[in-house]
Image (cartoon, rainbow, N blue to C red; front, side):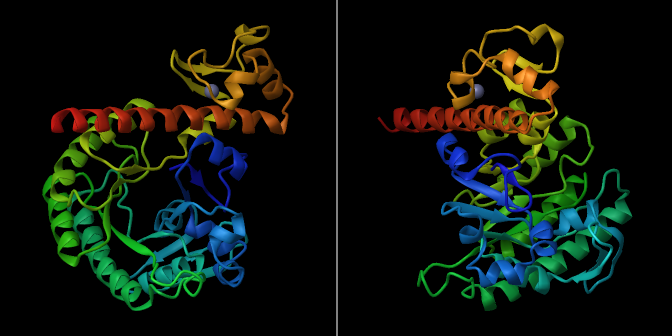
Length: 340
Ligand SMILES: [Zn+2]
């Protein structure tokens, strides 16, 4: 899922996302809540209509941004009080309120409100954090189930409703991770996510936690690993059976001139590309690689042109979506040859 922070996948227009074949995008609840506001978006028919994206969409719970961006946050059993990073105004998020915000935004998939356990966290801290996340998961689910038919578009599409995914936490402790997964599955969410990864831990630990939790999550519901990763990681996790991932990396790196290509990563700013007439990636057929040269992309970046971020982002997203497409195709092939 390309990440659309504030109702936009930064620098990439929606028609380009469609051309790239993006099937679903992620929008950040925290950003949309602060600006322009979930009530305003709800009055305009929800996020799909507001940003003109008729395809699938997921909103995160807001929890991760509350913990990573906001100032002066104070966590209690009830919820999180925090100060906006934009204007310093005070806000209070409870699991119930996080559900109300996500119902007003109206994405197809909403996420339970959780506390993203920081890394490193000692055992006592991870246990306490997990206890809170599990209590919040129950409250999120109860409030969501009671109100899930109230999305701004509900009257237009009778019979359709939003889905809610639970989030497994537990820090880097295998038994806490297992406990988390077990309790969530018993609550019966519409799908399950593994959160609190890619927060600074070494990669083998990320893999260990995914390997621990994934087999415990039902295969017939979406299984989502949040906030990963590098191209080789997402391929590895997808082959393990992860259905969904999101990461700001392809677009954030693009704006800094880092391109992912079939020949490895390149820093397009480098002088060696000043007169390079080749495409950004010779094995990519995205709209950028078909039309523009490395020399031109380097020039746009050097000149600080806005188009730079757009073209770099489009290519990186094409690269990421291409990985996932190939994984899907090879799995379908494996399945059909197993049947025949
Ligand atoms: Zn390309």
